[in-house]
Length: 138
Image (cartoon, rainbow, N blue to C red; front, side):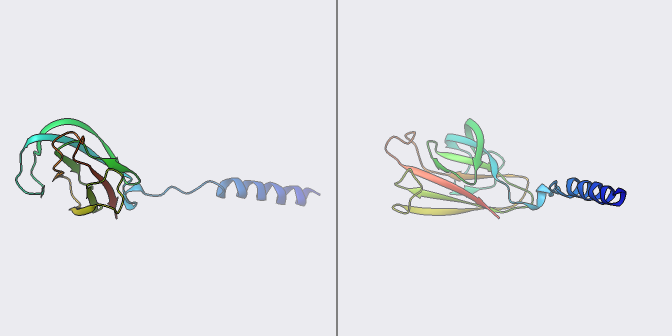
């Protein structure tokens, strides 16, 4: 009987010790979001995408999540790069729901510590110029 109790106690101890998930190093995982700053004109760059230190006139900040579609309301956005992962921003023109019915442009966001500035072209707050975007990282 005593050996059965000892075996049962050892099994219970082992099951509680191994039942907890092991920690995963977050740096190896793709980021689920990137910090974003929204900009209006005038812009501090003249190409469709730039890694200049300033993008333009900042109007708001937030996060872009990799699982969501975002309706664009500003002329440009600046994405904070991730040191371990490259990302892609896909911008749809003519639609505000990230559907395949519009044309789109993809922008490569390199890994690093800087900011990638992307001109969206939305000058009217999204009233008549409909654009949307999705962020993916790998």
